[in-house]
Image 1 (cartoon, rainbow, N blue to C red):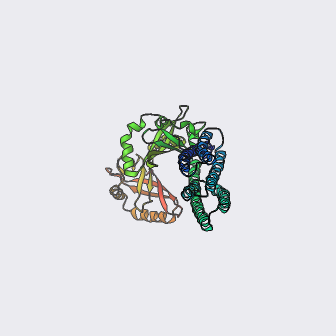
Image 2 (cartoon, one colour; image 1 turned 180 degrees about the horizontal axis):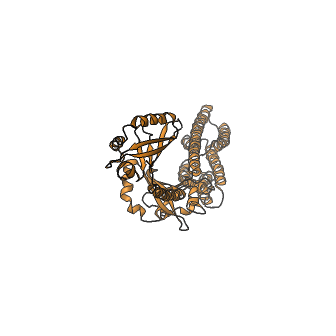
Image 3 (tube, rainbow, N blue to C red; image 1 turned 45 degrees about the vertical axis):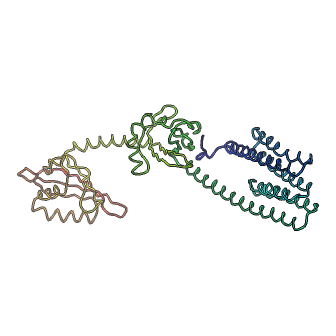
Length: 433
């Protein structure tokens, strides 16, 4: 069975179908009640007219049941139901009037009248039913030979049942409005997002519902085309779920959901990258998966392009006759070197693959010419104070070498929104003696 949880542009056919089913169930219940009523009526009267009226009620239920299979709208069917209930109540009251509201029959009559109050779906229809039936009941009671105390008792019982039924119907209406409002909010959220949402049956793997965005992501005319299809057919590799079952179970156990970047395919067979979020849940005594799929094909291709360009730029930087570094200062005063070019070996004698740890940095500090250390310290302090690009000239003796070489170092700071240095790009090159 398809579910209409995400769809906002549905016509009323789904509701109409359910309404007619409810009307059929009501007709079946009414048939047994009216049949029991007609049978009990035989105990109180032998009048042919009375019996015809009594047994016409279950026959009317059969006719009404047949009407629910016609093309008559649900609204019209429920209007027919209201008329049927009013006529049935009047028949019941009239039979009671004919037998002067005999004691036991009066009890049966009030049971029928009061039960009917609780099955009328809306306050408006309930008020119409009560107005018609109450007027007819009051007139027949006043025309009967019954005492005023009996009349007062019957009227009070019917009024009490009406008031109670009216309150219950109002509460039911407010509850339905709240549910409809919440459902409308859910549908709006699901259909204003750029992601596809799919509701999948846990055991059958069938798609039970899909939001409107699904049609655009999978290039469908209507997202309903996916209903009752196996959700695994959406993956470029149909065996993706089976092959990753262990990882899926582990993530769900740890986090309650599963995330991954997955290749999907459209109805035309076009492959695209999607970000999948899969969450299991239980509702209405059924187990489901909620799939959220975001098309990240453009992002994925952009990332691949960036990675390709990054490799090209790295190739260029790695082959320059300059030592280039990028140091991150976002975590404090101790730099974290994100990039160090291979030319570091020519300047400091450090192997390119070595991690520029705190120990390596301390070793590099010992390579400066003693006469240049005070000047370097002063200039670098000034640089961190001014936070502007600067140039330093000093001598260092590379590890394993006997002679000092002159170095020119250019530094370029990058600041955050608060004006703090978060990165420094440094370019070091050898100078002629």
